[in-house]
Image (tube, rainbow, N blue to C red; front, side, top):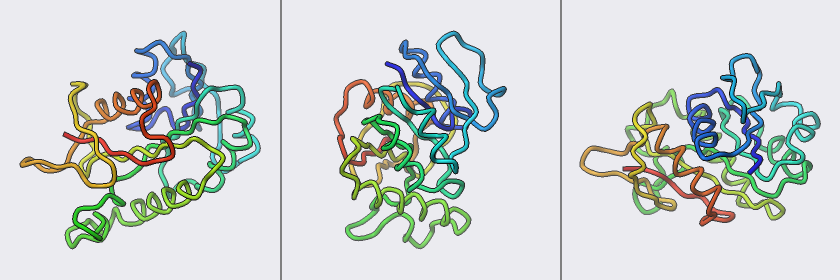
Length: 202
């Protein structure tokens, strides 16, 4: 497929880019600094600004799907959603956050007593993005939430999927960027969560 990846040089975005290339997809990597995108025959690096909706929409046009992997506090979800809608691309996958996942009935991770204060603004913005997507009717969107600990690691291809509840085991709640990328590209290739959120963890 021909995929537009916004934020292709970030921690999650770079792993998603590698996974897309590994599976033979053609990728337009939309970033602030195209020179930071590794040179690959399957990848075209384009300079893009997530705050410029009109220009971003033009970059997205003509792709089969859009994946966005950008910090929520450094972008406007309305601008992103409207840019994808205006581009004519139907499929939209968002790298989400864990803060909006439930840890108990009626309690989200962000509201739990031990949630780090420094992560609250990003987590709250991610929850707001999900709320906006849940009102979206034009796009075929999917919001993919990682586990609480989202870190560099190995590509094992072994993980569990959930819906709105935080995945954890006796070692806690965690997933590598590499395995998260596998799960996200699996969803791209074989959609199982249309207009829904799902989560990935061990």
